[in-house]
Image (cartoon, rainbow, N blue to C red; front, side, top):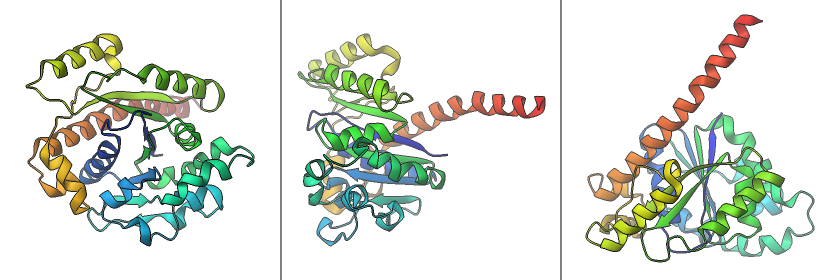
Length: 272
């Protein structure tokens, strides 16, 4: 069964969409079946893998509001054979208002994505920069959440609020939701401030912080304009190598976590 990971932070400009696109692409490049879900009305993840949001017929919006099956929204990308996309559209802006009176409105994305989990190794959800109903849906659907944190002065601002939201969702909607990790982004080795932020975040959150740190990188900024992930734009760039390392770190972590569960299942089967 595939791991559903939301990439969320209500603070904008922290590298959330960049991380979702390039993590999904890196997992696909490592030959893991990967679905990128664009749950942001800006649809930057959709355009970032080569699709024009204006040409999208069925998107996350139709899936959550109109009851269109998730399979009907999925598009195969032509850039990587193991990477699929569930696209977004500007209509998603109005979804929160339209969903107010729907029963179980916080679980619409969960109802759509959980049946797909058997078809993919990883499902990566790019969330909008808010803690609204769509992001709550993503966190309710997810098994875990990655929190990108920019290596700048206001890095920790709002992080406590997001962690509190995660706790609320764990208590009310998704008790199995875990924090996959805090991802430090936009790191500039030349700046003392970047190093101070890294030290402070690691001091406060310790094991929750990924070993991989994403640097500031021109190729990372350029690749969306070509509609491709950075691994296809410049595979040898620091940005590309960093996201491949992140993908490997996540794979290794989840393989280690799955091993004891598999051993327990084997033991119970033998006992039976």
